Amino acid sequence: MSELPLQSSCCEVGAPASAEGPDDSSVLTEADPILREMVQWLVLRHSGEWTAADEQALMQWLNESPQRLQAWERMEQRLGGLRAAPSDVARSVLNRSTNSAVSRRRVWGQLVWLSAVPLVSWLAWSEMPWRTWNAGYRTATGEQRRVWLADGSEVLLNTATALDVHFTESQRLLQLHQGELQVTTASALGVQGAASLPPLVVQTSGGTVRALGTRFSVRHEGSDLFRVGHEGARVNVFEGGVAVSLGHDSTRVGAGQQIRFGTNGLGPVSEMDEVQESAWAAGLLVANRMPLENFVAEVGRYRPGVLRLSPRVRHLEISGVFPVLEPDRCLYLLTQTLPVRLQTVTPLWTTVVPV
Image (tube, rainbow, N blue to C red):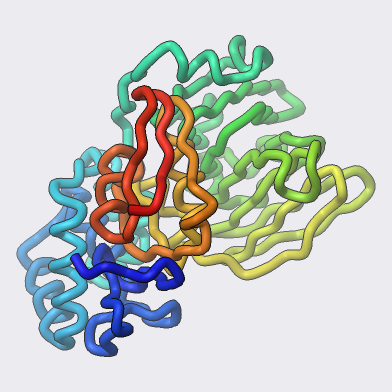
């Protein structure tokens, strides 16, 4: 591996840039669509619906560009054998699209993991606030769980998530105490009679998100969102739209958009990177020139214990596709990509430090 000066950034998928500077023939820039396309192909390939026609289409896509082929080979080497999404879930998603390989790749973000990662230790639960212990639906650190609600809606819970469901004749309320979820409403799934149901609302951090026949995600975020000591949430909309309300303020967020809100009010509505924001539902972390500080924090969400980053390497960046449900593998790939190593005090206390 080429040694990088500390001020350099990793721009390739799973491979470091050289100390002399990036080679234009192999480096993926932020604007390059190859990374995005590769993730779509990767998830379809592990969906259980991969066909000979898909394989032929992939080969054609790869052979159109040496850069695509090199980047694909590097990504496969880094990721190793990813676990496939269960075929029945993949089939139900893919069948809602057309038969072409390209259009089926576009629905990759709807593929979800059904199997949960086992609880690693009691610490995964002890880290949760007391209010989450009695939540109706919970996931431990590193666990994902799919839930079908009584109305036919589908909810995917991400790592360390706590959710209560309150359904009555007059309301459909999801109370998110912590963590992250992705909701596909009954109407978005075409459930009969869904149009006559009361609105589905997600409540978190003092605000509410009302679904308007949609697929969206809500992530509870900590005190660094607006200012120290305050909590908030981030909402991403993949299909349809939602109405976000906080106090007397309200705004609509459409497909391809996101918003943050907290005790300081509603933030601005902005465009989102759908591949990056929905990759977790397929067990992946997509990093595109991501600050190393953010990467370590994201991987740490899936790993019990404390994961810290030395200030001396905080300014580095990383790009690639990582199997986030295997956080230790992500950290290993990190050490193979950037000039960093892991300093472990105990299995539950690890610091990323410079080599």
